[in-house]
Each structure stands twice: as C-alpha cells, then as structure tokens.
Image 1 (cartoon, one colour):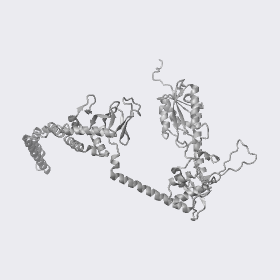
Image 2: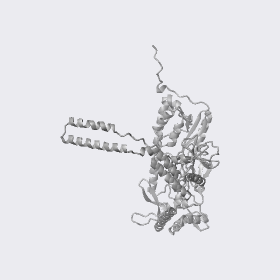
Image 3: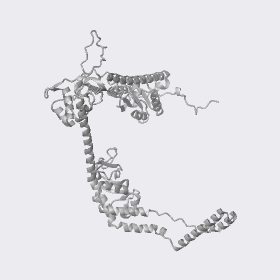
Image 4: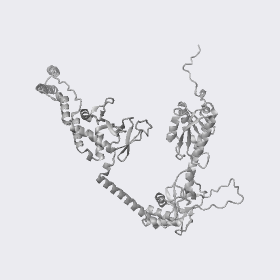
Length: 591
C-alpha cells in the first residue's frame, strides 16, 4: 500500500525559495559607517548601488530603511529598533530587502541568522547588492551557509579589533600629551615633515602625530593672532563678560570659527587634513560657550601644585587629566576667575528662573496658560480629534491623519468661542430651575425604597429579640449547662420564625442620588462665574462634566453641536437637552 503524502513535509534542506521576478517591491537597507572615507560605505553611495542593482533586476524600490546612528556597538535585532522594524516589513508590506553587503546587514554572529529566519517565515526575500548572498542560495547551498557564517565571525572580530584599537590609540596619544579629536579655535595642527627621499608616492602615508600649535593667523583689525584672540576670550570671561558680548567682539573684528560643528561625514577629518578653513563661519554664543568650557587651552597644574605652562589633555581609560605638549592659552589664575564667573552666572540664572516661576505662579500665569478643552473635542463631520495647538487655539487633526473631512482639515478653533457655547448650556439649566426638577425626579425613583412603615419596625424588633435568645442558648451550651439535643430542640422554633420574618432585599436605586445632587450643586455654582474662571479651573470642571472626546464641534460654523456627559451629570442634560437620534449617550445643543 502506497504511503499517503497528506501529512508529509519536505525537510529543511530540500525546501527552496524562488528568486522574485520583475515588479518585486523592495525596501533598501542602508546603515551608517564610521569608515565614511570609503566611497562604498557612505549613505549616498549605498543608496546608489542598491538602486542600480534593483534597476538591473527590474525591481521596484519603494522605500528606504536608513540607520543614521554611528555603528560599532549595537548589532543585534533588539539593540537596533530601526533594523527590527525593517525586518518586520519584509514579506508583509514589501516583498524584498536589499543591503549593499553583509557588513551593513549585521556584524553579529547570531543576529543575521535570526533575521533571515524571520524573513523566510514571513514569506519575504533578502539579498545583497554585491551578489554574494541571497536567501534562495542560503536555503539550498551548504557552502554558502559556511561562507555566510565565516564572514559573520570575521566582521564581528574586525569590529572588536577596530573599537579596541581606537580606544587604546586615543589613550596612548593622551599619555604622550597629544590631543585627540577636534581642535578648538586658537590652535591648529602643525605641518607634517617632508617625506623621506625616494619614497613611493602611491603607498606612502604619514602616521606621525605631532602636538598642536598656536594658530598664528593674523588679524590686522585688532593687531592680534587667533591664539591671542583665544587668550583675550578667557580674559573677557574672567572679567564677567557674557557669551553674547564675546561673540559680538569676535564677529566685529572679523574672527571666524573654524571648528567643525556637526558629526557628518564632511566634519570627520584625519590628522593629516589641513583644510579646516572650509568650516569657517561666524561665532555664536553656543560655540563660544563650548570653547570656554574646553580643557584644552587650560594650563595644567602638576602634582606639586606648580603650573606647567602647557595645556591639558584627557585620558579616557584612566579618567583623568594629563599634561599636554601644547602651549596653554589661559593661566591658572584666569581659569580660576572664569570658573567663579561661570558658577555665579549659573546661580544667577537659576535664581532668576526661580523668581520668574514664583512671580508667574502668584500672578496666575500658569492657571490661564493651559488648554481647558484638551482631550475633549472631536470633529462632528469626520470624527477626527481636535487637539490643542497653541495658546487658546485648537486644530483639527484630519489633515495630519490624511483623513477626508468636509471642513478641509487643519481648521483652527479658538477656545473663546467654545467658552460662549458652554456658558449657554450652563444658563439653560439655571433658567429651567433644574435643581427642583432633579429633586422631584430622585424622590420619585427612590421614595418607595426609603420608606419604612410601622410593620417593618415591629419585624425588625422581633428579629433583634430572636437573635438575642439564640446567643443566650449558645452561651449556655458552651458552658455545659444544656446538652446538644436540648440546644437543637430550643433552636428549631427560633430558626423557623427567623426564616418567616426575614426582610426582603431592597432594590438598588437606579441612580446615585448623592452624586447627582453634588453634580447639580456644582453645575449651579459654576454657572454664576463661568466667564471669570481661569483656564485651569475650567479644565477641571470640564473633565468632571464630560467624557473624553465628549464635545462635538461643527467646524464650518465653529459651534458645539453635541455633548456626551459623565454619568453624574446625565440627569441634568436629560432634563434640559434633547437626546441625539443617531448617537447613544449624546445630547444636541439647540441654537
């Protein structure tokens, strides 16, 4: 008898994935690289190569997944949320994922396998633009899997070696007194020595790191160099000058800041790059603040307390300051005065901010600066939320949600208009004598349950007597004065009578009278001074009165057309307004 193939399943090694054909939708996976000097690893070059690869296969590139964070640390799926989001799309919203090579996919030994398994389970496809790997080959070719595993281990090992080598190299240079990183204004890198005779121009590169030197660029307007201007900046700050005053002096005399201000690829220059003037730009207060807080121009003080005359460098591994080989711009006395000015400025700024906060709190500024209708408004045409946008302004979110709305979306609404409509509703309840009507309604609903006639009182007294008698007999039985049979004989008539006169459970009132009366009193008290309340008080009252998104606004006319109250205020609206025909729990506002 032939074996049934109903429950058979191909083994893992026998399964294959077909390479997608023309028209396949693709999301390109691009990842930032620290080695941006390589043209094949910039974000732009990666996108170009992936685009050319897709055009060759007639695939449709519809989106990009760009990881702009600096690579080198996170490599797993959990540590890279952008990559995790990209993987979850493959096979669902797009058909295929393309990365330039395996190192940009992941350099972790385990994470690439997990990512490919998830893509395969989702019915997606993955490949590299260099043609080395794809999911179809990985499923059937054992040698491809071995090469894939070896490349993952190699990339991971290279990553660790690069990170350790950079850290150790920075620490080694710092212990020699050499500066790492960017150079602040007033200093420059020295010219490199000429190459040795007979050098090969194609292979020679100098790895010599020299101490930085003062920038002798002369400024004829003030007859001083950039290094002297840096010294003058320290003197001005020690005299109590603000960052803005120092900026004004620098810009008026034609000094320019040449320090790179971003961490983009164009700002990453090696120690052999002498073209830092391309970053020239006017000074701003933030740039001056960073320069004055830098430890590089500060004079280093040795362990014996004697100033060395040289600047300061920082050892990241030992977490301490070391003596540098460059000339200091600010003496120890200047640095001490600068620190005192910075501390006094910080205390003054904090005291001023605290005084402003106290003054605003006393004047009621914060009470009137809120948005009382925040979280309560919704559009009557499309149902989109109307959120707080600015002071006393609310905006329709239909435009941002790309939702069709007859009003057009992005319509702004002033809170003052809403205050008038809510005040109208408040006055409707006051004019209709709502309190008396609600008291009559409560008495009608709860009157019978609160009445206790004489018959009920007599039955209650009899139950009290029987309970006392039962307790007395139980006490005699515990003391041993009566036997158990005598106890049961005496308990029987008491038990039967208690069952006959057991009180009937009173029905629960349909509405809590206390909450309704409290809500009514609150409503009547608010109606008198609604227009004199602060925004904070209005927000608290509206939050108690209406449910979330319980105020429906007609944006073309900018009027409140429906409201949905909280349960305690439901009776007030039921007696003053008409229930909405199509929406349960809503009431129409008459105009």
